[in-house]
Amino acid sequence: MPPRKATTTRRSRRAKKPGVTISDAIRLLTDEHGPFANEPRLDPAHELTFTILSQHTSDLNSERAFRTLMERFGTLESVAAADVDDIEEAISGGGLAKVKAPRIKTVLNQILELNDGSLDLTFLAEMPMDEARAWLRQLPGIGPKSAGIILSFSLGMPAMAVDTHIFRVSQRLGFIGPKVNADKAHEILEAAMPPEDVYPFHAALITHGRKVCKAQRPLCGACVVSYGCPARDENAIQEAAAAVSDTANVSVDSDRPDGQAPGRRRRGGKSASPTPVPHTQVVKELQP
Image 1 (cartoon, rainbow, N blue to C red):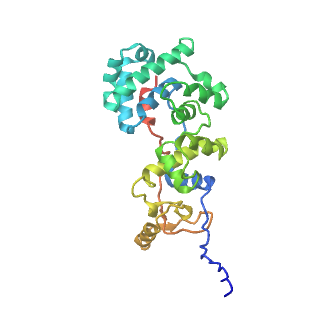
Image 2 (cartoon, rainbow, N blue to C red; image 1 turned 60 degrees about the vertical axis):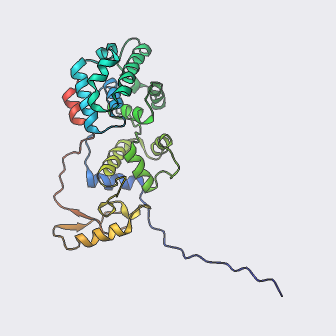
Image 3 (cartoon, rainbow, N blue to C red; image 1 turned 90 degrees about the vertical axis):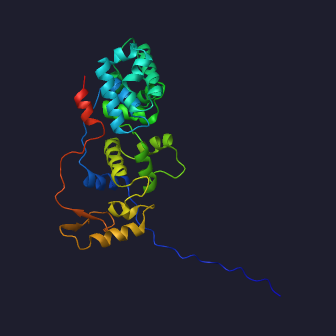
C-alpha cells in the first residue's frame, strides 16, 4: 500500500487588526486626559529626596512625608546632618520610613562628598544625558526610574521614567515585549521616540494607567486606544458601546488612524485646563 500523502492543515487566518503607534497613543491619550502641565517641579536635590520618599507608596503618603520633612528641617543640608532617627520620625507618615530615612541621609551625604560639599546638581543638565543618568545611578537606591524622574521633571531633559502604570500600559499596547523587564523598558521606550515626545508619552501613559488601564479590571470600554490594543477585552468594549448608544450629547470618536470607533464615545464639554503631574501642588507649596 503506497504511503499516505501528508496533508497540509490550514489554519484560519484572522484579519490583522491595526495596532497603536506611540505617536497615535500620545495624541489620543492627550486629547482624552490632557493637556498636561509641563513645568519644573523642584531643584534636582529636592526632587531626588522626593523621589526616594515616593518609592513603593502612594502620592498622598509621599507628599505628606516630604512636607513634614521640610517643615521639620528646613533645608536638605540640615537633613544630611540630622540623626537617622530624627529623619525617620519626620517621614513616618509616608511609609517604609526605616528604609528611606537612612537612604536619604546616605544619598545626601554622598552628593556632598562627590560634589565638593554642595547639593546643587544643576550641573547635570550640562552633561550628555547618559552621563548624567550614570552619575545619579551611582547613588544608593537610585535606579533608572528615579534617575529619569530627576532628569526629566527637574532638569527638563528627555529622560524616560517608567513607573508601574507606564510599564503595564506599554506592555498591553505592545510597545515592549512581555518578557522585557522594567530596567530594559527605559532603554527601549526612550529609543523608540524623538526626545520631544518623551515627556508627553510619560504624562499620557501614567494618567491613562491610573484612570483607565488599571492593573485589575482595566476599563477597556472606556479606552480611546482599545481599537489597536492586543490585550483589549472585546466583551467590555461591546458592553460599553451598548450602554452609550442612546446617550445624549455624545459623538463618535472618529480621529483614530484606522477610522474605527469600537464602542468608545467622547463626551463634549471637556475642560482644557492642564492636568497636573503627581506632586505638583505640594511642590509649589514647598518650593525653597
